[in-house]
Image (tube, rainbow, N blue to C red):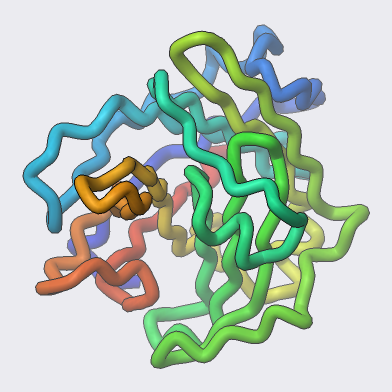
Length: 216
């Protein structure tokens, strides 16, 4: 772990479960640390607020994105990864270490569609890999001014992938926002918890990760 990495505390909800509804209405969420420290280093256009929360109960890691957005863009011509990849979405990346060999990506759009894959350095993506279905739950909801993506990942799967070390998970937290440009095409604005300090947008780099600390 790099000492200067940003940290987020994942509070423990001992002996409790949390109902993943896609609406974030479980009372357990009141115990979570609220993270709103997101930036868009490559674009001067102001972005709407992104709120992230996480909790764990020794069996599962729970996560919740709440995004202010009145103009959601979603590509639904088909259910392919390509369609998800040009839609508004939130993202969680998990790595074994700063070598990024490998790291695991979850990208989820506003309808709850999941693009999950294993990746290697230099944006070498393997889309044939998927998170085990029994170890991942995702639900979403869209309101007038917001959308929410809520989910859970089994602690067992995170451990089996060597992603938890001394109660620390090295994690990237991101968002992609697509807006219509003057040429009528939709162009992305890339939003991140950790500024990777790159000249052009790049989440697939060691400097884009922080650490989640599973509190006891």
